[in-house]
Length: 229
Image (cartoon, rainbow, N blue to C red; front, side, top):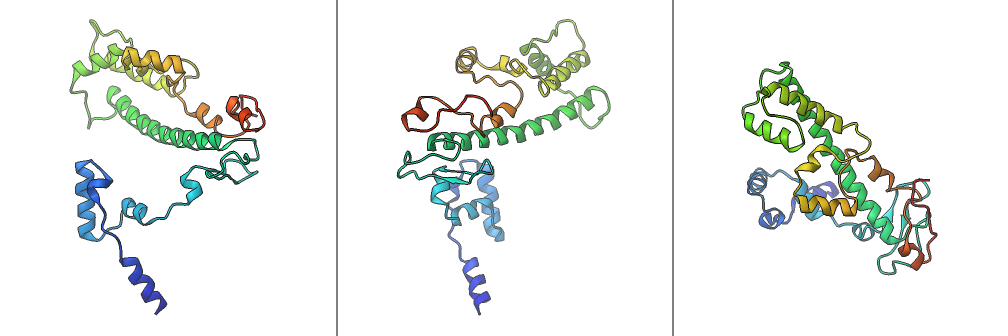
């Protein structure tokens, strides 16, 4: 009887407000099809999930073995984490880790596309080909590759090698930074936000004694060195 009640309860779900969940027409179509087929999606589970109130405020941290640390957004500066981090630092670290992990995943997708591009350029992959030669030339020229009087294969080879180098470079702006509008790029440079081709620095700043500044001093936390310990 208990199992029957559990199953019955599981089947009772709120109707998903599809137009509020996403503005993407294709995703809306997919969600309508899922609803017709009785398929549960991440959107349904998110709607049915009651979020942890502390986690929802990003007031918890489990990035090291000394925690997990749990602060309260209702009295945010009553205490700090074990490492001395305030609630602001913890929330910032959590956000930075999400950005870094998402960037790493998309970067790996980009590497897969680059592998295919290399195969096409070298003639190892026959199922794809460079159809828009002008676009190839435009993209190559935008990152400083010489295109005048050169064959498409030569340009494509240089483009591939320049982009592959991005995945291992240690310093300097990534080549595609040159494609960003000048005003935006200048602002990025001013703020130190120009991508440098790796996510390691972001990950490194998300754990350990890495955050310092007036915010920590104001709220009585330990002032920590601005580098990983």
